[in-house]
Image (cartoon, rainbow, N blue to C red; front, top):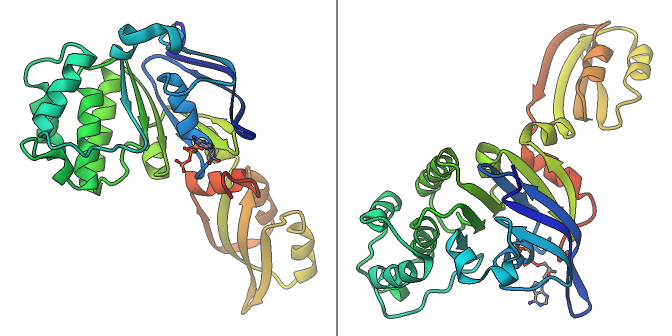
Length: 303
Ligand code: ATP
């Protein structure tokens, strides 16, 4: 099946500043794809090129098989987009605003707007300028979802939403995926990506520094370990663990305490412990946050 989104060697310069340094991305239809990265990494820039708000300096993007620049309104109707910074300042009510969007984005099933507003908990009768940031964000989500587009492009969609609404939003994403829709979302909320994304790409300083399913990203990450072994031969223990740069050994009553972090596969660490009597052992599941921080290394975005 052809890709829902295909990005090839995408580069974007803002004047002399390079925001994207040749990224490749392939989003399979019917999947949820998460794009994560620190501030200034280029996430918003990448998503904006897909909806033709900005044009690439070089490289190509294909969205639902079309060039976003030439796809025009017909292509836009097949996409639901939530911009990173949603500015809603008008005197009109949420109802009026969404009715206007519905004319632009194409047929919206009767009751769909009302149902979404109900789920997310937003009052559509109020003038949009009087809504809180989170409630404005809900209107942004409603306009993206209401016409059941083939593709949802969501830039930090949960910013400003409280945890209960975030949970409802995740349910909406699952339903979208079950209905065969494709989702590309950027997020700082790593637990959210962990819960929902089939595939993840990590963007740092305009480059994709890691890509894969959430499970494979975890594999290459750091685990926190804490063990106690009983041994009288401290030298032998130190020799055995000398290969683990992140691990420290300290003498404790009845043996040695081993604490620190283990990089990558855990198996060598477990094998190193094996000859000793182990009285305590905890290995903490790494989360995506730790993986991502490690992957960023010294490089960041604006930093
Ligand atoms: P955040 O998570 O903070 O929203 P991001 O990953 O979405 O960050 P972008 O907004 O895409 O990052 O920005 C990437 C880089 O391009 C940043 O260094 C930013 O300062 C720069 N940049 C973005 N838009 C412009 C612009 N219109 N003119 C000049 N530089 C820009």
